[in-house]
Image (cartoon, rainbow, N blue to C red; front, side, top):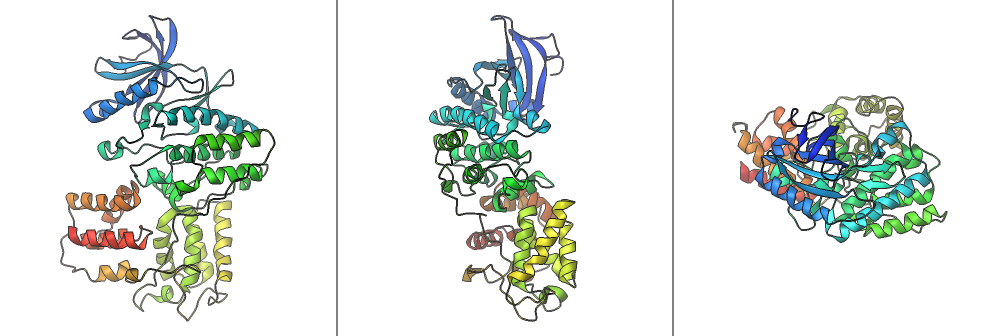
Length: 480
């Protein structure tokens, strides 16, 4: 591959001038079309993906669809095919800089961000009108030319509405963790233009604040935050951001897609109002998180301080921690509460899970303040009574009264450990409820050891919905 694309080498009618970039899907080169005497960008498919007939067929099918798009804000595809068994797409070369590179140097002003957003909306409007969803909107896929025109690139990962998602066929998840929509994280098949609206919202958030909406220790951690964490106020990073723009971003990034803008034309309308100094009337999304995090009372009186901490207090602390580390907060809080002898000690231990510096200090303050939010918690955060395990106004379904720990205790210890096939089936069942994160969580749970049922019981804690937990529990029993 390296010899084939060395500078000065010929690739069909193209003379390779140099490499522009590389990623998991392939490489991109700057080249000269020797027939038409113009500079082009050549995108090649990685050998791994090129060897997959199903993916290759979809790649070429999508290239044909995208080639029909003709808009000043979309990079034009000139040709595509295969040369020396290497699938490629030849496209317009844009002499400019990606917004990803630009924001690394300095954030954009609100007006600059709004103008960029409007151009992106116009490009996406054309794509969506042709039934094409991009699925990977991010700063790196928005190129600002030297003339100031925005170009949307990398439509090679796009899909036509109604086509099967490639995730189940190739094991790849299309999307970038910092900008991916909740429905893509869950692995839903019915992805539509509202996923692009969410990702564009995350992109605009990054451009105007200089920070991605969610920051975590790993890709899986960040993706879980798209599902469970409240969107941080952009003004916590950049106080100059207007309330009107904050409202637009919140609506674009609503976790329930039905509460987002219905289409990019609506987004463009509100961005136009902001551009002209007006304040758009935005219906605020009702969701601040996809689910209410719940906490079960630890089983067994021998679990020391976990049994004396007020459970309402622990639930409130769990919610604060979930904003930073996602659904694993439920497990982390329970584990820390078993060892901590005071609220101060508990908050200090949990703060180690949250970044560093100011973020850790802020969490510690919020954690200590949780003691003020309950009725039965004392100043020390300890109660002799049984607190509620849910936030006020939330009722736990009757069918979910048995905790995962209780269920796990009923599993015969003589059962053999699961093999790879068992774990694969377990991952498949879990993915039905939480999407691609299932792979990471199953591997992590399997390393801790135990029978299939014991591993399943631990994994069950990552499913927020009570009915879904019951469904998953039944599936694990069938697998066993």
